[in-house]
Amino acid sequence: MRLLFSFVLTLAFAAPSLAQVSDAKWKEAMAAFKDDFKKKSIKFKFRALEVLPVKDARTIDFIIKKKKLFKHKDWWIRTTAAERLSKMKVPALRAKLLAYAKDPDKRVREGVIAALAMSNDRQDAPVVLAALKDPAWEVRRMACWAAGQQRVREAVDPMIDMINDVDQRSGRTVQEGETNQRVHSVLLFNLEEITGKYFHTDTAQWRQYWERNKDRPLPEVKRFDVGTFGDVKLKFNDTFARKGSGPLVVVMPMTQRSTTYYMPYFNQWLFVRWLFINLPPVTSFPDVQYDDGDPIYPVDILVDAFEDMRKKQRVEKMVLLGHGFSNWVAAKYAQKYPDRVSGLILLNPYSSNETFSRRVDEALRSGDQDAEYWGKVSRRQIKMGSRIEGEIYDHYRVTALVAPKNRADIELGMIRRIWRDPNASTIVIPEFDIRGEETSRTPCLMFFANKSNELTGIDGLNRLKRYYPKHIVVNGKSKFARLPFMEYPQIFEKALRAFIDKKIRR
Image (cartoon, rainbow, N blue to C red):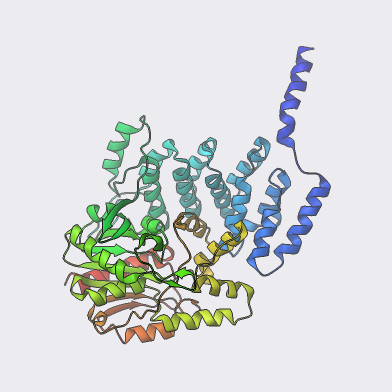
């Protein structure tokens, strides 16, 4: 009798774990998915994924096996599929998902680990730890990210073992370790995420610190300090300015983005001193002007704040690295304070407001719904009224940066998650021109994508080359990207070293 009672009790507790939606509900969800997923616009594709039930084992097999969404050509589809699976909290469904972590297909294993990272459940730590030793670098990279998201203590020792200690002068590997830079950057960043410390590739210091502190509470991770420069408050990170050597390079993201997504990649290259700055929200400036109800970003005030920052950093000259619109901020500083700029590094710059406006107009007239949305996003940051709008916005501002052949990389989903700035607001970009008589005397390293780039293009490159005679241009027709430091770190590092050695240190 006691055994029978125990069996019934077991079934009573197990029943919820076996729950699934009714067959009618499942058929309804499948019909909705099929109808929306075949449409071109990502608005409908996102809605299709949202309809998949998160309390049904059939969803797992549908995403992974039937539709093979982890092998999709669009990073956003793969990331959203992983996010959907991350919401499957029922134990039996969780067990079924974890079983796919041993799938023969590396894309499936990568997607499962991404789902675990997004769910942020520390009970998944054993699966994450096993993935750190996966033969596929894509899975190891995702495991490093998952370990950082969950702050898995047990991951610190194996992650230290993965570090590749590199002689900064010769670039020669001096000990065994993780040699893939795409893994290495995420590895170092997430070691800091877990421990709250950063020792770069100094494995002896990492081991010494962790041996003393592994049983203590994990310290809070503080990536940015806040300082007042001129009349402007700036969030900055100078960790790598203190740990590196050589000239100071100030890194600025595109307008009102976070530099956090640059840091995992740049922190590998300490032959320069990196200073990361988040451009402040427009609301932090005094006496802002408006255009049709939207504030105009006051670049002149920001440029003066940078000059005050330079003085407080006690450096004679700086190299400024801009990306997208912040190239124009860097050039503006070089025009106003030419004697304080030793070089410019421009990632996919527009040559002028004229180039930018022409590209946006082409998108708005294209007749393509998604291209038109990109045009609206680029002209002004749109006001979002729903989660789906927010997801579409994130999709376009990230996807617009990468070449089509790289759009399957789920790492872009990681970037999307650390890109968001809650202080960002709708702004107007004033007219700009990064050419100029003073600027043209400044040594310049320029990265350009190919003709398919919606943001810049060959015409912009040719215009800028005429104004920067002291330049190094990286314009790879096949091996190039809009996020070159992420997609082709070896090419980026080689160009950066050559620029620093030939143009800055001479």
